[in-house]
Amino acid sequence: MQRDNTTEVFQPLQADDPPAVAGYRLAARLGAGGMGRVYLSHTPGGRPVAIKVVRPELTDSPAFRHRFRREIKAARRVRGAYTAELIDADADGVPPWLATLYVPGPSLAEAVARRGPLPVPAVLWLMAGVAEALQAIHGAGIVHRDLKPSNVLLAADGPRVIDFGISLASGITRQTETGTALGTPSYMSPEQASAGELTAATDVFALGQTAAFAALGEPLYGDGPSVGVLYRIVHSEPDLSRLPPQLRPLIARCLAAAPEERATPAEIVHWCRQRLGEDAGAGPAVWREFTGPEPTVPDPVPDPTPVLPPLPQPAALPWPTAPDARRSRTRRTALVTAVAVTAGALLLTGLTWTVMDAMDRIRDRATSASTTPPGPTASSSASASASASAPASASAPASNDGGRTRGRASRPPTTAPKPPQAVAYPFQMLTEKNSMSIKEPIEREDRKGDIRLVCKETCGLESGASRMQLRYGKPGAGLDECRATLDFEPTRRLSLTLAAAGSEICVRHPSGDIALFVIQVKSTAMPQGGYSFVTGDLTVWRTP
Image (cartoon, rainbow, N blue to C red; front, side):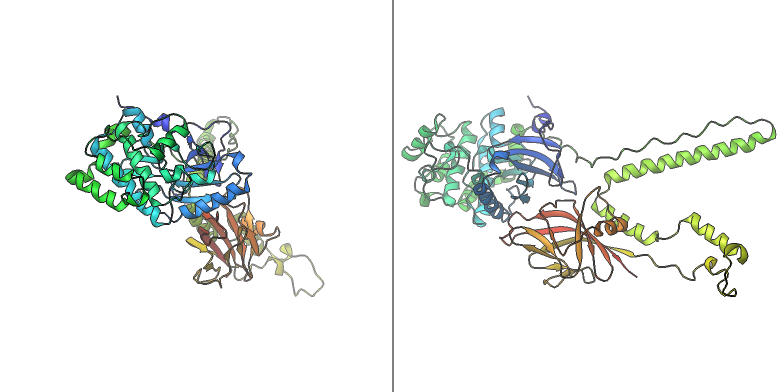
């Protein structure tokens, strides 16, 4: 019987779950593992991501954070059609976390537990996809070290390998009793079980075991105490007689005791494609009955909506009689209409605040700054005009200068000052090799711009002339908010430790220009590795 697995995949947040992590608002809980909990969130553009938050008891270990930084740095280099890409992480966060693209599908372990072993075509298609993922992982100089059914997700368009290079960082995966081997015993290679050198061939052995599990519905070397499983892996030949005959030759090559005798990922892909023939592209249809319908991903969690005060109610008016009735009804109709328009405007403002994204905010700021000049309000302008048209004796105080300044205070200025012009520069990226200027040209390929990303022990923004300040409070700052923020001890080197996606940084240039930089993605987990970067949207209010 097919099932709707949406409620099983997306679990509601509990009281001890955070509402957000580093600017990513959490929509649901996806599960938990040895390193910590996994949540569903979304990028600013609405793309689903999986946020893995490290367990609190691990964060106090300097050795853990060192390994976590190293593995994040390695994982950033992996790009492949059959991998879940790492898009953001922070090993120095409280707690440390990482974000990968969300894959809508169960793990191989879950699919087999629910529906039983996979048919031969599905296993071949699975092996080809995982082998291609290993090509991308090994091409980045990484050995997965913990490939197993729970680390292979079955998406509608193919398998995805996850946790490449990350699982080792926790140091808490199941081990031998002596603690000398890292990994999951049922899927270790002989050299891994005996704490030998790990190479790309180690992952090929694990792929053979994973494929055997998919075909059998259970681990090839059996279950039981870890020491017994590892002994069989090191000292026994696997029993392949239970496998379908079509799979035995390839799985036997993957499980060769000597690493140099195992098939390469490229050979596995070629072998599987040959056997699949015309069915090479039918993999998703073959295993769709095992994965079930794709779950409906919850919508992104909006920012908290501000609570609007109750609208004032118009006072009750007596119903007039005689000839004044028509005029009174007209006035009352106009009053009710005005109140309704005001309520609609307030409601529209609240809804707009909830759903607008970064680009909307930039356009709003630019439009506001260019169409609403600072200065007197409409009512005060009207008063000034009225004063200017009044007699001089009524609008100016008496003076003893012989009348030379009479009426000067009421004379309107000949030209109004021009307001600062807002210009938007979306999608700016700062690395340790380029810079960004407040004046044109904004994007600089060298380090001579106004603002540079500098990473030593931690990462921060640095400027030789401009002053910066991180802004706190509700998002959506404009010119006035940035001016107020910059009145509070701006600096020329601003740490990014407390910054996250959505953080707003105000900048004052020596020319008087004011700028706002809204962070979209911050990747500073490896400050000394040369892989740090920050992306965001820049708005500059230029002084005429």
